[in-house]
Amino acid sequence: MIRFLRLLVYLCLLVGLGFIAASLYSPPVVVPTPPPPPLTGTVDRIVIEKAARRMQLMQDGKPVRTYKIALGFTPEGDKLRQGDGKTPEGEFTIDRRNDESAFHLSIGLDYPQPEDRAQAAKAGYSPGGDIFIHGQPNALPDGLKIKGDWTAGCIAVTNAEIREIWAVTPIGTKVEIRP
Image 1 (cartoon, rainbow, N blue to C red):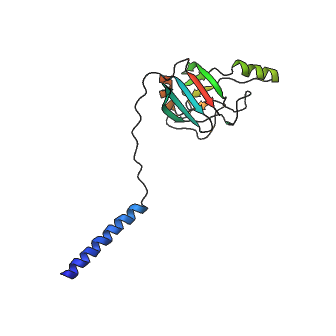
Image 2: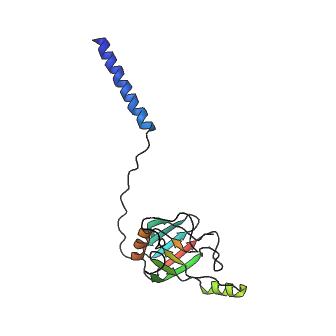
Image 3: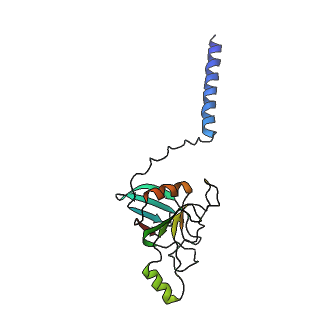
């Protein structure tokens, strides 16, 4: 009988060690996070950090939403001229909204500003224009996202994100784009 009990204890220990070993080597389970609460009201400011590929919506000086972004195809440095693939840096204001653009919803920035136009005119080239925060190309099925930096100088997010941004950013909202 003692022999049987000893065998049973060893068997239980072996099974327990097996479960512990299996838990150490099995892939982790991804636990879905609940969606953030819906935004209410309007945002005061948008802060874009190019190097971090991050955009934050601000209310009362506090970030209420953060998004991963795509930029122009050569994002380092400030935009100087049309076709350079750079996203401009500085302080801007949302001055137009377009729900019929080639991209899923677009929110326009007041670039180029007078100093950009003057610098470009002095150098003899166009400063470019039509800088927007927008979703993915309309030709792309909803739910898909182009990887990397691919715009001509705009700031791109997913279609679901631009719908959320569109709902809380009126014309006149300030936008700061940092290097």
